[in-house]
Image (cartoon, rainbow, N blue to C red; front, side):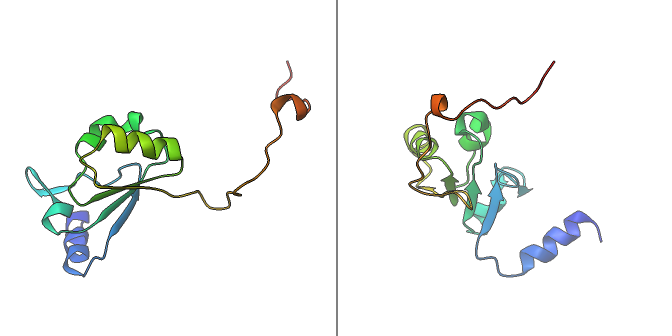
Length: 117
């Protein structure tokens, strides 16, 4: 079974939503010029691990069903400001991230030698 047949089999089953990282699979087309997720009216949840400016071309082509989640609140605000056509954006902390963690100033952390010549 080739990958197109596998995709067709996948698309024949009910899809609640699609979750991807850094736009992977976001701009797929089976019919030229028509986004598959828009055609199927399927929410596409795009979890951007990088700053959104690194994905400008993909962000410009976000499907109407696109949802963008960012692990940084400033990245989320960037998406809201520069991509108002994306109706749903949100913040989602990475796993195992401690909230309200006190981070010592760099000068108080001591010296760690990473490499030595």
